Image (cartoon, rainbow over all chains, first blue to last red):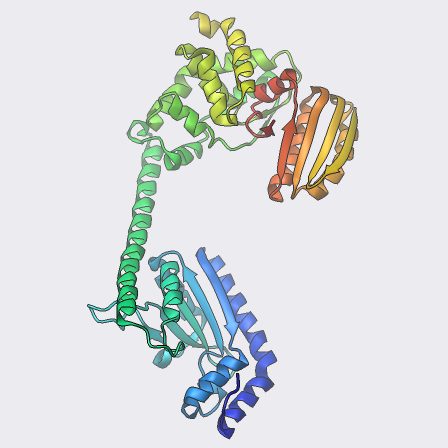
Length: 353
Length: 100
């Protein structure tokens, strides 16, 4: 696009061209520093992005308000970075880390979150203007949530750069949307906070042994697995052939434990307590006459479920259902179920011994 | 034991013929090494003509699975006999693999 710049603005543009390689290098360095800080702080963000202002964008800015700038040093967003968080709470964490990491130009930094009147909704974002040591130009870091980012992008088309008159009804709808997204952001944070609290309470209950009070779900089951509840049974089975135990995920068994009626971790603990002997009988019968010396860590849970199903009268259909859940539906699961039922029928636990 | 490796479009196929027992394992482990290069894609372990698998054979399959998982690939075990399926079942590895 053809720009009409006065000699003063041309001079600023020349300074930009002369220093562009150094500016690009510094942008990379700042981005790497910010990225490393986020990782060290354990802050998971949706995105961290950066850009160096393009010559065309700078020329456009100078064309509009060039007299405002004495030199390139007066332009605060030659380098721009953006941290997009999942939660509003994380903005506070990231901002506090930025304040420790960089020297902030407070006079030019803006917290748009505070700029709104109580009855207005719109752009919510935190803009820091910062200094980098030994670098003459300031840079900008914007902080916003994913939803704020989405809204800002939608709003961009209607903003100051479009130069098109936007109908008021459209702007009002955008404003209403901003209000909704602000509420959604807040709810996401509340849900996360409640979930964290729930997990903390569950971990405490698991640690204190009050398992009958803990409902069986994905979170509680994971906490329970940290106690290695199948370890004793697995080692007992492995001892039959001095086998190595190969660790595998036991999460697929959650659905099977639910299938057999476990509603709390207490129920699951009872299954382990009451059916470990039967599970051992099945496993040792199967591997005792082989030289198989590697077993999956799911060997205990698998045989506990088999023992429970058979002892409860679930029979071949019940075992097939278990394998269907674990392996996906297949007629081969029925064949395996048939073999298991036949083997188990000769074992003491099925004959009340 | 013989291992034949071939390519079919985007899939790499390893065909196992014979007994994958302990004596055969070192040679088989070497024969399947080239599969590691395709660990990001789909690898079919065709067991139509495999008559037996030992713990050493299971370890080879587990090594291939590990490489596949860490490279975002996919391992499919195809056409195992009921006897071999039973070995996977009684060692607890049945639901670890995608078995067709």
